[in-house]
Image 1 (cartoon, rainbow, N blue to C red):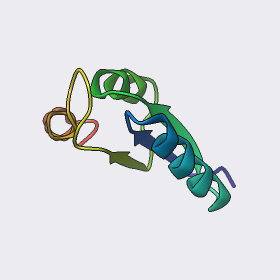
Image 2 (tube, rainbow, N blue to C red; image 1 turned 135 degrees about the vertical axis):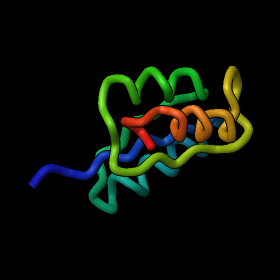
Image 3 (cartoon, rainbow, N blue to C red; image 1 turned 90 degrees about the vertical axis):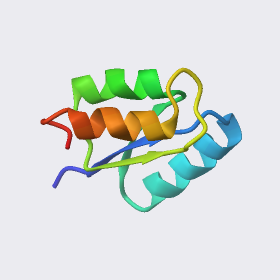
Image 4 (cartoon, one colour; image 1 turned 180 degrees about the vertical axis):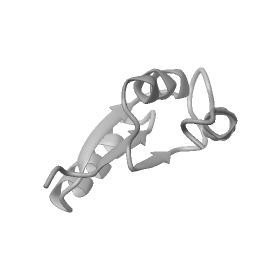
Amino acid sequence: MAKQQVLLVERETRTLRALKVGLEQAGFGVITARDGKQALAKLELSMPALVIAATELPKLDGYALVKRMEDNFEWA
């Protein structure tokens, strides 16, 4: 059975690394992004089972990211 994918969006390197390791140890496949625009680009490529995003992100904050996801029929 394939691992469920999680998109993890966090600007802080240490936090991103710690969360990624924890999620991988829990059995998830983890895709990472450092800002909201990069997260949108990764969503275009594949739809994860879950998106975990910080609210304070460069280029496009977490709130705007969620709004863009809600506005897209395929991601909502």
